[in-house]
Image (cartoon, rainbow, N blue to C red; front, top):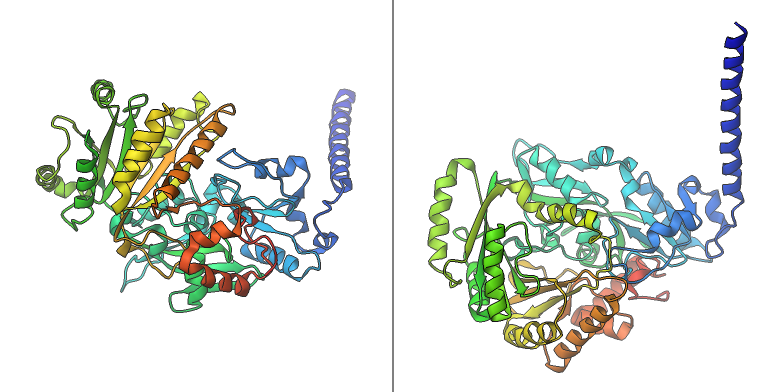
Length: 531
């Protein structure tokens, strides 16, 4: 009995000791100096408990996927609802000492676009509970007996992979995607959201029916093409400058079951782009996805798509020509129509001019195809090749200048400088699938190309590759190529004005209307002072 009492006393003492330690640590947290850049009044708000500050709290939000720059916020907000975000923005807007605010989704910006130096970063992942199992509660696929499943409502913080999985349970899926699905809805819609489906369905921003947005005044506004349309069009592709997207209503269509995934190798650039342009001109009888890539001899065919034997075969070809290309396509289908896919593909192959004997096919599920980049991520992370600097450059280049771009950049700057292995995407787009009213800017030609020069680097060589990006931009400017940056990065308002072109004045007016104190997305460096 005495031993039993002793055991109970020991347990009680342990609980009391742990309680004391927790209370002491909590007190220490409260005694930390409040950030000088934030007004003390924030502590009186209902969201005070959701604000975290100090180096340990802000470190993760001081860097992004690019790992090229660093800037610490003063605090991080972990909201449990959009109301919490609105409260924060309203407080800043009304304060004599307004502070900047940036919404951060998956942190996949490249050059600090989601930073809020000295301000507050909003961790959008916290909406809906912070755990993915619960966050999917903020994805709704309404059933309508008349219209059936025409859209999905998704929180701005939702990852596209979760939107895909939720909609697939109802037999539908969004029509337009990004190559990588572990990005947030709000993040991609603030840019455009592009992949190989954009030639047919337009970018993701062309497939949105409605938005819930928190403006730079803290107003919670629902917008669409007919209601608050200026905000709706301005936010889509608006780089986070006019509001924080908390919900998007996205168009869906019946989801296919299978995908016939194909790649064709080219040694002639003219044949390569001619075939791409042919394929994006074909409607229902063509591919559902079209994208291309450059393959340099130092990194040819390093992809799980190709078998080891095929990879060696492609590397021999790349060594002979120095640079080759592959056209990637996909045909979506149902299991019941598999025989028709073979016939369709056979007819398409007759129209294309790839190198004979260099056509490769795979058959995969729709989910496996769309989530293909994540499969590469799973392999690269353990090798330490994922969380590294990413000096990326993304451009929209008009069709009429693609031959010049190939000569000067692909066979010039990249090959002559013996550039380390990179993924170089070359994707054709139909301008008619983009809405001119939206903030995003594209070249003024019916067909243009999205060029993505996507490099992974080390801390020792990223600056060299970044300098090479500047060299590419100088070449384009000197050659008079009217390109537009995608995921743009500029540091002067003059460059931003040139980027937006004829849309600049409208964009400034919208900024004055919806974020006049320039509180939102300061990391873009578009508006650095109050308007």
